[in-house]
Amino acid sequence: MNLRVTSESLKRASQRASELYTEIFSELESRRVDPGVTREEMRTMFSNSINEKGVGLDQALEEFSEKVLPNSMGTPHPLYFGLVNSSPLPAGPLADLLVSSLNNNGGAFHQSPAMSATEQEVIRAFAGLCGLGAETSGMILPGGTFANLQGLMLARQAHFPSWSTDGPASLDGRPILYRSDVTHFCNDRAAHVLGIGQTGLVRIPSQGRGEIDLGHLEQQIQRDRAAGHLPFAVVANGGTTGTGALDDIDSIADICKRHNLWLHVDACYGGGSLLLEPRLSEFQGIHRADSIAIDPHKWFFIPMTAGILLTPHHQLERETFDIAASYIPSGGDAVDPFRRGLPTSRRSSGLTIWMTLRAHGWNAIREAVERNIRLTRFLEELLFDAGFRVLEGGKLSIACARWEPAGVEAVVLDQLQTEIAQTVIDSGRAWFSTVKHEDEIWMRLNLVNIHTQDHHIDTLAKLLSETARQCAVSYD
Image (tube, rainbow, N blue to C red; front, side):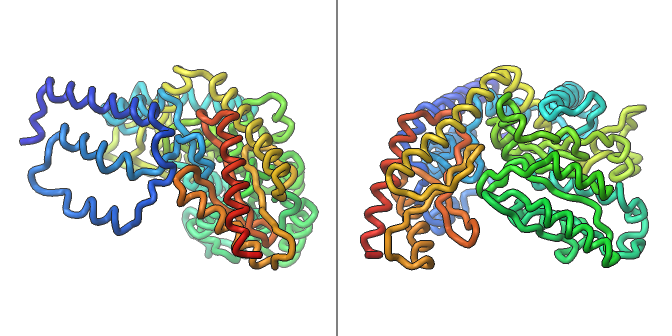
């Protein structure tokens, strides 16, 4: 049986896996960023590859080398400017191997003693970044979608405690959650799961680069109250995914205080800049939040997936999620994670985060975040000098630009931005996306990478300029 793995064969496979780990990072720039393959090609390649007998560790690893590695997105590549998917620090993937090997269930202390302790240290450290006190509770979850949802579930419980027993029928009005019109779509999904529906999710117009309109927010709350609705929470953005906009959290906290609303901050992307002393003013008031979602797997360079939900309302966690399970041993006076959050079984990702931070320290991440921001502004300068229109006001690591030849209609210009992006992607030399901002399509370049240096920015700017001019010829 293939389950009878000898110590020698396990050692050999581990060594080969280590070689592949080194190869992935040492040969990053020799591979395409986008592999340039189709769904059908990949379906055919892996079709019927799972069978009764298996091929053994050695063969499976060789097939990884031959089939998986060359056909995977080069997310750690220095010219990947994509969807807030970061390049991991070296300790992270190694830690993930050990987490998987031990396979401890992070849902309860008695199933993951050491890993539960490392998670609590991670929560303490991230709470400190946000200026939260020692009483802060929190949990590591599988990404920002879950962290945002869990925070908003706490908000619903805080305002409508009867919901947990009687549901929406217990209310005498419509519950209202506020977000800007550029807040991440996971909050729309949260509204669905919360049971408030799309009519209970009010989108407040944004302005500038994507900051929520504070005056409109206050007026809308007043209108909804006057109409008999039940406002209960506001989502503030600590870095929007589309353009990197930062809401005025402190002013939103003032509004929430005046109207007795829960303040949830989605800092899943932008939270990394909390490490930089000069940027702290951009997050002023975050310590006043009732809940904060932040993703270590984004700008802290931790492997996916790892989201964190922080809250000072530790008793509310238990009121929201606690449930009896006689077959699970009691945690005594301590409340285990499965009783104060969404998941029951949990991957012990706290160990991955802890080992990465323990190995590299905050300074390694701080320097990378600072470099990402500097290089993004450098890219904006190069693109502006090359004739691109650059979206002003960038503070984080997202640059947005448009190539706009004179005399070309607006709708055609949008097509041109998309064509430029796709042409670059098809070349395999770089990867980035587009975003719609104020009814225009912009090329969106997002840098969360520890490997990118100045010469990569030069290369990218030249590639974009050359490609833009080539694509624009057909629009003359």
